Length: 266
Image 1 (cartoon, rainbow, N blue to C red):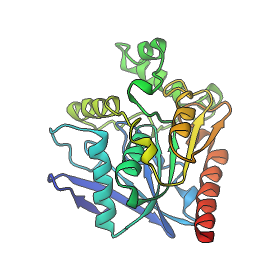
Image 2: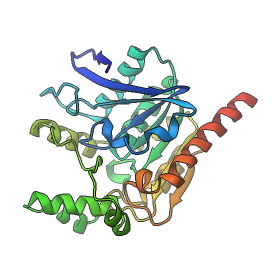
Image 3: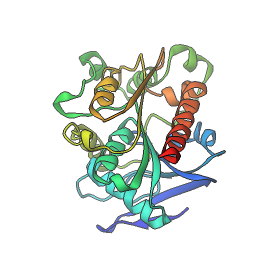
Image 4: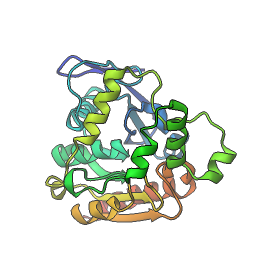
């Protein structure tokens, strides 16, 4: 497993698989690269996939310094530099989509094409989850919180047929300060003013039944980013990319292929 060192002295673990054009996969809040385990192979026929453990997760360092979405995006740039990759396609989901927005807006030369999944522009323009969802995630018993999170991620039918383990409900080895840092980073995200500066062709994906990150955020992103395309997956919840992989992965691959063909015509 390769590591890169950031300018502030934090060691970031990254993982490289497959062959082909580079595709960065960015996971959700307080999760490591295993978020992508169930679907990563979907991209390997045409892409080299690059993941990383955010600072505070997995095999990366967990500094006591402040965490932010902007810092996570700069860590992605360090990973690309360390791997000798000038430009890559970027697919971010949930908080990873927030990181991807920051990356595309502030480091446009590093992003060829962009996919934003189940994410939000944040700030006062973003649509927040309901009070009922907040209460379900703030229960005193960890088992009840975990169950609530699973039901926000997946449909009842999928949960009934897939008893786990689940890779999308948080890195269990995270230290408390890092977990708090991730929450602060995600909550502090506000890309509204920066989104019109995104130059990369962009696809916005969202499950129509996502309550963890409400689906109403998807059209906000698509309208704010020049030329962005929008696709809602009917019946899908937050982890649409896993439960509805037969729909989601081909959508992403077709989009990336189409942007490459369109660029070739230019």
